[in-house]
Structures are given as structure tokens and as C-alpha cells.
Length: 220
Image 1 (cartoon, rainbow, N blue to C red):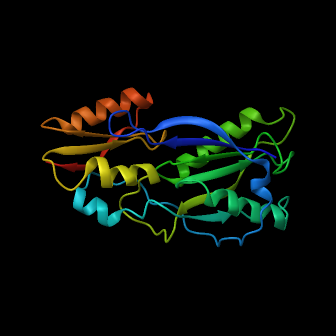
Image 2: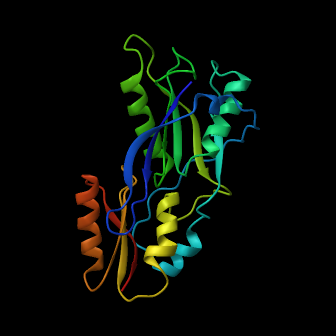
């Protein structure tokens, strides 16, 4: 079985995250691990940017994920354990969508990962799954959600790659700098210099093609 993966991963401060689809081995959803407990909904986007020091305090560790398996009647215990294992291999935030009429072992099953919140990952996973499922089947549903270990509501949420970028590309020193992100695409961009915020926004919009880019972290 294949679990397709749509990953909004990192390309660095210049280009921001890459997007693409890869395939996980069919056996990945057959390995037995425990099922994680459910978590609450993600927090809304911060009203305005925070500085680098505050962002580092709000960010979770970039490695490690917790998986919430949704209680769906067609999932077997083996399916649930497989979803946990598959989800733990993905960078947060993420979601796994499944076509109910086809079950977990299907070309339609898709994991969307490395977004800045679960809601955006859910939307991407459902879109990709519905595009790949059999046209006469039921619409896809979310079977699992992926969050960082120890997740709790916080004023800032960044993808695993953007969290790494906050530590490396953004850094602790270097004068004016800004990180812009797009929730809908998982893109992020870091720019430095007098016009860092404006440049980061422009680069984010250009790279993602999205209209929701915003400055999430800024030091002046």
C-alpha cells in the first residue's frame, strides 16, 4: 500500500519551503505502534508579529510529532496503529486523509505535512485525496492529525522546517530581519536588512502564489 505525501518542506531562507509529493512504502501503515490520544484544536494565527526571542520561546522542538487518530468506523486496530507510525515519520503540522469507500490501503490515501497549522494540512490532505479517489466513492475524510510533541495552544505556530529556520536562518543576531509565512501553503521566507519585512512578504507571496502571507517574526 502507498501513502502519498504532500510536504511543504524547507529550501532555506532564500526560496522558502518546497512543495512536492513523494510516496511512503506500502508497509509503513502495517507496523504496530500505540495510538495517540486526541488533542484540542489549533490556535488562531497571531494578530501580529513577535520578535525573535519571543518566537523561540513559543516554538516547539523541530523534531518529534504526536499523532491523533480520528475515530472512524471503517478503521481497524491495525489501521490505527499504522496511521500512528506513518504520522510520526512526518514533520508537523500535518494530516492524513483517507477515502472511506476504499479504506486505508488505497492510492487515494494522502499525508499533507510541514504546514504551520493542522487546519491547513487538513485542507491540503482532503484536496489531494479527493482528486485521487475513485469518482463514484464517498468524499475523503481526515483519519489522523499530526502536531509537535507536547503541543498546546500558543500565540505562534510554525512548521517543523520553519522552526528549524528560526534557529538557523533567522538567528539571534544580525540587525533587522523578518520571517513571513503562508498558512495555506506552508511556505516561509526569512529576509534581513532595512526592508526585511516588506521583502519577506514579497518573497513569500511570489514563492507561494498565495494571498495569505504575513510577517510572523520581526526584529527591527
